[in-house]
Length: 473
Image 1 (tube, one colour):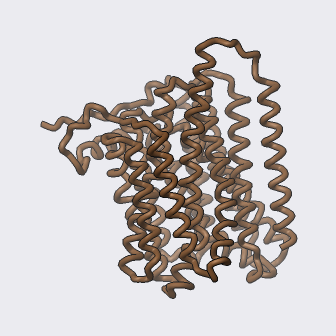
Image 2 (cartoon, one colour):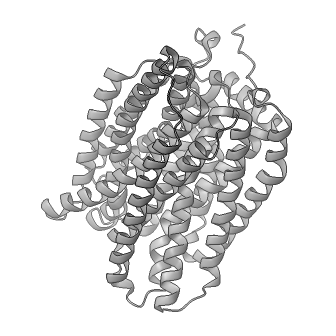
Image 3 (cartoon, one colour):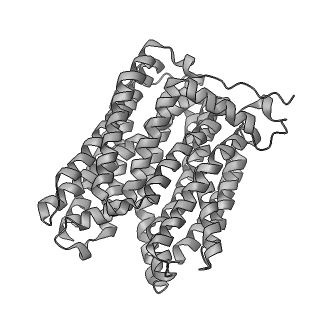
């Protein structure tokens, strides 16, 4: 306990110092403002958009994190399902997300992204309600709704932000700042939600249903705030009158665009490998630390989780510092910087997993602390990855079909995780870590060797490849 307690204090102090340094550096490096109407109007628009987005984003991520720590405990301890059945629950969620993600994204582009984000609040709250019952069909329905809602959360919300940022005439630097601060906020609310969920369970007499009730209430609040503060934006205006409700022609066209454009294909590959490795990491970090710990049954998992979340905040703060203060350049150079960062993040993550494999088996404090710090480094990469990937999608995907393609990218991601879960990977953790290391290294090399030269030799606008418009005839 003392080791992880100390590390939490150290990482928290480091995070606070970096935040203070970033704040004062921004003030010192900021040029004397020209009090023009255009600059003042842009600053007002930037502040208003950031407040609107972060208020809703913080609420929906709080609702998501409230559920995370006790999902497995609810199924295993309170409802007494076996580990094999529980794995099918998770597979159901990922399958539903993979199947419905393209449709949700396409509907968001056609019928409105704000409307689809409101639908997210309804679906995710419904999932929490169905999880209050131990009946198997009820849990399966909850997992299906949760999978659909998650696909909306990680594609449509970002699409609304990028589109609103473009409508307000803001710069790519402004978008990077909002995405970076969103990731910092995500790490903060994850830490608070984990502690709050733990308190709820204690107060309710070890009822693992309580965090899901709290999550549903937060989602109701998020829906109200979203409805009253966000405006609607759309994707393909010319396709709104189509009677193709299943969006088959549109999805087919989107798939063709991705397959024919190496830039989008590599972007999709990076997302599949990195986020797939991240989801697998969620399943294996506890047993991986336990097998190297001298006190496996006494690990303070709450403190370790908090350390990971602070590491996420550190990564996002570092991203903000790099993009805002080290990249006072053109949009084209900023795009090249983000591709470089994406390649570096995959490379560092590959090294982290390789270190975990090479520590070998056995129980001692050195091996335990090495794996812990390696995992913290990976979480810092996660903190940088989300704003980096979000900025790349915002620059490389046309607005008309942004939600469609962002959601389509999640299909191979969900397939990747489902295949890993279905093969019983939990019994071969080192093999999983080694495979993730190889795949991440491949993604890093591909981005550096293929994507970066394409970005450097091509104007950014050429990467915005519009999808063919669907003709109802």
